Image 1 (tube, one colour):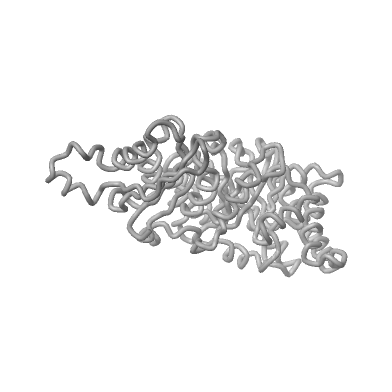
Image 2: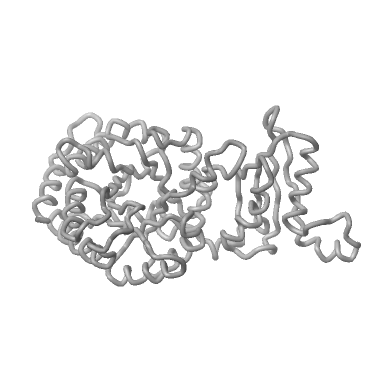
Length: 394
């Protein structure tokens, strides 16, 4: 709604649960109501939360939707979390399962600066699934080792390559040096293959407010994309990064989110935490556990995250990037579940290929391209381009 923050909760149907809903609406906005003098009620009425919906969803659980006036808080996601689920998250069994931000916040929180369309335009790939390869074993790597590993992934056909989110020990290959080396390698590969340059997403590792300065310096060195863990550095930090010029392409990693999305009846629904909130914060690509691996979301939850990232209500849809447990044999199932507007995010299956990293990336690209041409082999043109990329970067 235009002037309200609407939050939906799942609460147990125990005791007077409808009264609990009323107490939540009052407690998170004006503190108390019935004991206030009439003049105070008149003054505070504009700030009072309202229960918009209160209905059973099962024998044991109910959904409660509470509208918080937008005037109660500034248009920033840290305030949303504090008002909609700050103290409430400590109040026993309760789960935040839905959020709708005020329409009046669209300028302050415009969402992805690039989104699905912008990322595809930058890569020159209008329709097929995108392949995102993940660096592995990065800690302690030297710059020449970094360049060779990056070349192998790009030569195999990866559209994007990102650092591992745990890559902090980068003294042998500092961020600025990696960015400049990746920029030069990408330009060389693009010139030789005739295709748009691939993307490298660098992990931002500075603390506090320094991370924005770190990103600004990297942009000046030629960076185009960053990996960010918004539940480690803060959703508002992700928003601040999205405001940098030129706007970087931002990949949001779900690190730490498992602490509050996995317990039934508590915490925050994955679709809210890994979908709606990261998209609102400015992520262009949202990474989340796939429903296929050992670190997995339940299938319905993963599909809900994908819809929240790329849903029709999004002004600029973000690209969903289900991760963990993916291999080339799952590409068709992944596309059946998430559609063609998806990022296939793989690491171990690429680097662990018997033929090496380049062969692992090629196997994924072969599976992806087969979807576009199910009745024929992988095109000779694509194979030739792979060879050019591999030869041209040596």
